Length: 284
Figure (cartoon, rainbow, N blue to C red):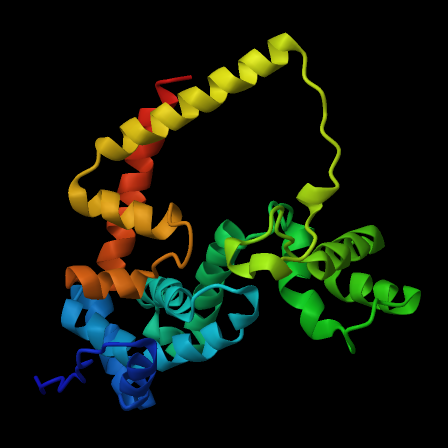
C-alpha cells in the first residue's frame, strides 16, 4: 500500500497566516480523492479523513469571506465552516462521481448560516424558513442600496418562493441595523443622541416593580453561581466570549491563549454553556 504523504498544516499565529498556510496545501487530484475516500469509507481511516480535510480548508476560507458583512470575526466563521467540512467528509461517498468540494460546500454554508443566525446582533432576524432564505439572499439580489420597488419585491418573492410581505419585512430589518440604546463612553462629549434620550418611561405598579427586581436579582445571582460552578478555564472562555464589555475574544485568540485548537475551545465553551443553563434552570 502506497504512503499517503499527507500535507501538514504548520502552526499559525493569526488569521492571515492561517489563510496563507491553507492556500499552500496542494489540492487533491480526482484519483487521490477517490483513494482517500474509499479508505475512509471502508476502514474508517482517520489519516485518510485528514487527507481529505486539509486540502479543502481553503474552500472554507473562500466561503467564509462571503459572510464578512455580518460583523462577526472571520476566524469564527472559518472555524464553523471547518466543522461543516468535517461533517461533509464523514458523509462523503466517493463512488457517486461527485467531487468532495461540490458536496462539502452545502455543509460548510449550513454551519456558517447557523452560526450567524445564533450570534448576529439583530434579535430574531430570521426565525422562519422564508426569513432565512431572505436573510442570506436579499442583499445579493438587490441591484442597488435603495429600497426595493414594488416590481423588485414581486420578483424577489417569486424567485425565492416567499410572500411579498416577507420580502418587505426582511428588507426593513436589514436596513434598520443595530442602534445603541445608550451612548458609548468612548464617544466623549460628541456622543450622538441615542434612543435613551427620548424614550418615554413606562410606569410600573408596585407589584410589577417588585416582580421585576426579584427576577433581575435572581438572574444575576444565578449567573454568578453558574460561573462559579465552572473550572477556571471554562469560566475564562465564557467570560471572554460572552460577558466582555468590549472586544470579546474569538475562538482563535483563546486557542492561542490556552495552546489548544479552536475546535477544542468551541467544545469547552459549548459544554460550559450547557452546564450553566442547567444550573440557572434550577432557580426558576
